[in-house]
Length: 319
Image 1 (cartoon, one colour):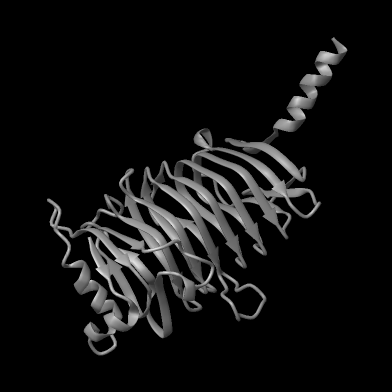
Image 2: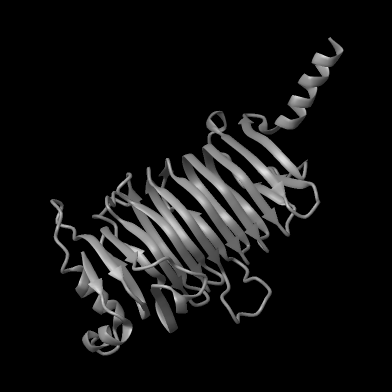
């Protein structure tokens, strides 16, 4: 474990204002794993500026010394500077060529990341229970992605993703995505207590299998949940979608026989919700919804489990 001193103290070891280079040197002090990758925990005790992407070694955990708050000034983490160079403020490296997500031990906990418009906040790659994300705030990335997650079998808890930050002007930036599940296949993630604000898309997924999302809230977000390729076994529980009618937008279903999405929650503005199907059709669902979305070769079917229960009760009463 390596502890980074406060910002003023650390500045003494920063060369030519290159904070990303400073952090890269710090992580190289960690021990190497059997694969040759550095691994361990870097404890942040303050917030630090970055003028280019900090590329985190594949098995490194970033850990704030205390719980992250809504603002960077009261949290540990990173703040992108004007003129930032790079696609992400913080990005975990791939373990080696052709291996995207075997990042055992990677972690992001108690960290606030403040970006600038057009620059993604965090691209995290993790694998298995030794990895994970906990108590993270990502803000200010308007027009880009707040948090992209790749890999398998880890948990994500208590994450707030907002395309805007304090002082930014409305309206919400076009193209902003709060949460994005990977450029490659993502398997067996658990996302718990996540919030998307001021975005075009709350959660976007492509090739995903067996993902659970629980306590998912969006506000001032046009499309809370978007599917682009192949949803296989997604459970989205206790959703609260505010200031929108959209519940789910499905752009494509690659393998109809494996498509399965279970969703329950509420559209919080006293309006019926809407599901947009791949063929452009729209299905309206109740304000408080309990649904199963499946597909056949003929198209996508939405089953309203509340209607099924009503039908069952009516049948029992008439028997």
